[in-house]
Image (tube, rainbow, N blue to C red):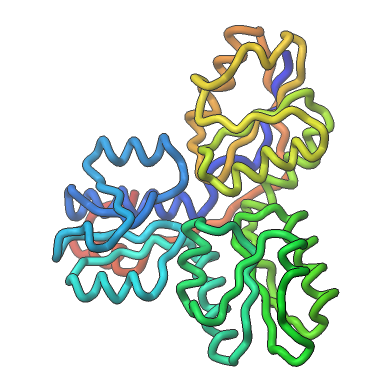
Length: 317
């Protein structure tokens, strides 16, 4: 067996920032610390923080008044911020700056009286937070067929935005259909789909032709991880999205395959290496690292946390 280890893979800058933010908040404030929704969509990361005393909630009302509440990397609606303030919560915002970019675009278009078509997956934390910036302005679609059902006319002021973790190819098809149906529609000057999502998809697209099977490390509720597995399957390659080595099924292999391994943007490198070792120990697999693109993006911790850490001379995570 030969393993092709795709790079870039795993944590993106936004995930790194969110995790470091929570780690620093724990060192500053102790536990319990509350987090609105999962800090990132990964079981291993969430379980680790639960063991450390972090409490994940789906409602601000679950948080005791005056407690520390951290907003996850996926962002929140203004209503969540208002309720947090009313409950005198000490809020720390770990929203990925690339998600904040979409929020600011939404606010700009809504103030200019545009109707906004958001391309994304219903119920995803990021989509809920983005639509919450201007609920009355948004219409959500996730396919070209849903675009065909839109009732806008040629005189409507229309803009589109996208969830940051979509399939680049799928989003492009939907955007193209929007422009065909509504030539007046405008979009952001720079793509909303984040650099890490695009880079990981590019690696799978370029490397999966050399593989017999693709293993994607990531959780089932991770949108960008799901897209990596779908991308491989769309190319006719068997692909499996798993949380770790414990979910690998020996029945997937005959023993002589070339296996492409990658990881979604919220999956820790430790689960990648555990899976590699699992295959090496059972199939004497060799490993070839294949780097498609270098990444050097870094997002600093939230300003309020940097200031608090500096005040007590706490080293950064």
